[in-house]
Length: 116
Image (cartoon, rainbow, N blue to C red; front, top):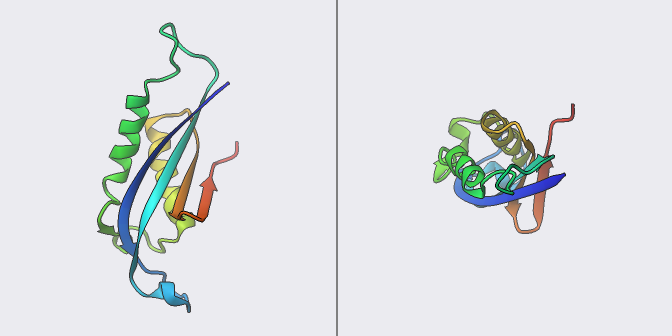
């Protein structure tokens, strides 16, 4: 089994609804994203998939989030809801996706996967 990971980031603003802490106010993050794929076999040229392909999928998926107010298209843009949305979009592009991590700061990460 091969596990491949690609990383990217985007910058955006959001605020949390029905929240009493400071995150109720609009604020921004540089979100770091890690997409994780698993392949059982590599192909005839020795690769499971060209990194260029899965990096392109991630870049394409994140373009809508970059320099945007996430509240305009995610009802409650918590890190949990954002990572789940990114996972769903990426899974459509590549069925070998097994999970996505999102870092809202260098110290805070959430990992999302759907169990079968």
